[in-house]
Image 1 (spheres, rainbow, N blue to C red):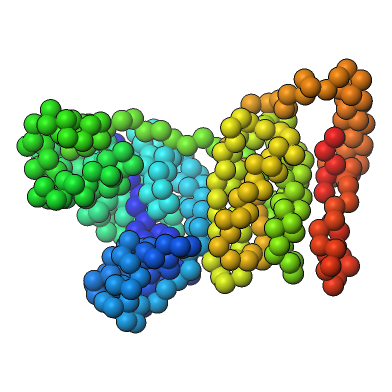
Image 2 (cartoon, rainbow, N blue to C red):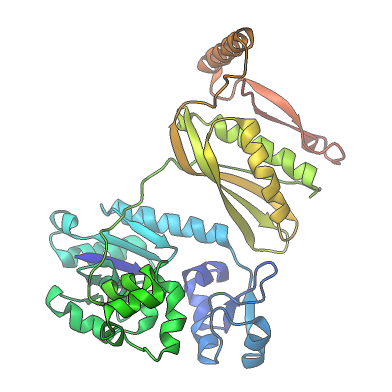
Length: 392
């Protein structure tokens, strides 16, 4: 059986400082950047007609006492990672399509926790926060069951009742799948309210009208689903640094270069290339900003990584107080190609790498450093320069 762990309004609860605050006020995540649409909303705000994705003016007109909370994607990612690590601590191989929603197969955990009841009890203890747990033969059925679950009472759907159970579920469940989410508004305009009404339509007509998403939606509605895709565990490599007094692009770029060098020098990388990174910032007006960058090829070159990340700094909505860089995906071992170097240059670089490696073997991984100019006009002398690992 597949277990679905659903933490409703997870991003809002993290941004507001805890789930207890959601019951006290009418809250909503403030629009980000040029967007004028609110994010997740609290139950009291939803009761007054405010919905996620609603334009800010309309939301304030319906609920004048609405309190806007700055989005905190970095805090959400950290809190969700902590929750996933807790689930993996009970032996679960977790698939996490989005923060606040996770799936795992309970079949392999019964021997560890006696039975399914023991698995669900261990899940509640590991999360240590209010959560809805649904259980079913597939991911989609478990997801549907989680909406009927309560904090201390999971909803279990047996295989024999799966089709009848799905037939009565709302069509909006398809919005939780990336492939089928775009067709949900169109299905609602056609007057379809439940998955049973969707199944009653001929499969050929759904395929002709919506293509592959329509076929996938019907497969989900009749109880078919794809196998779980548990996430792979990567080394948690992250470096952060305060920006200082200046927020010019040049100062931010120099800070970013230091983070790149420090990340590449981490011994936990063990010579592997980096395929994707997450660049984040702490903003001066509260809240955080995050951008995931996937390189066209796995890199181990500081210069090439800086060139790829430099333009992302222009996307910062407001000045930042700190920058952070984390590895999102590691690549295979090896370095960048240096075939353009002639034989003498290549030999000199190899000798330099060997010498730096010997120094770090004797004096530690951060023995060979270089001085980097950060902010020449800083009032505090310690902020004008910093040290970063030397990467030959």
